[in-house]
Length: 253
Image (cartoon, rainbow, N blue to C red; front, side):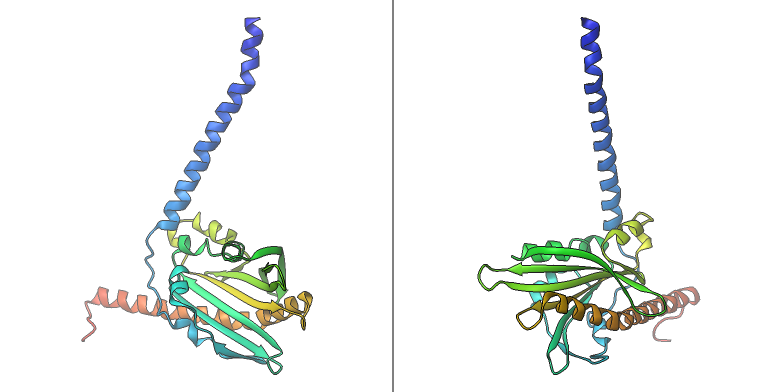
């Protein structure tokens, strides 16, 4: 009888040991990830207005700055951002473009559409992962969302979201997490791109999805080129500073 009781306890003991091991493992993983995300950034930052160099004219789209409230800007934890509306065809098609840039991965990871929009009263209707071809055989991996808000005459919007991490495109933060595992110095910068358009009576949800996809395809090469230019400028500043330190040259000489 005692032998049977002892035998019955074995699965419980095994489950407890497994649970403790998993708790320890996940706790260790969390601490490592948190430490790497919190590590100080050694690369130089960029001016807050650096992204304003993005062209106002993108194909047939004409841009107009739409400044954000300062409290919202501070909440985004970014080093630089740009907020604009772009329209074409006599303003019959209009999108809002928001790009945020930073080097502190931990601060930027929480700012995702499914988190920020729902936290501000929007209800997530659906989400899809898509790939948009845009020349040279490249594809833009991104997520599209639809949100609604209100009870009567509901507001509806479509959102296309993607990341550029050290020149690579990703539809979510999984690419960022994979880079973080390689060490704190593995991530030089993170940029998030959001393209938003309202869904109304004149345009169906499918039409709006097509509009934001078209704008994404036409704007992505210019956005990517802007970040390459920013990185080249940062590297130039770093190399010049390094050269001056080696040869003892000061800024006044």
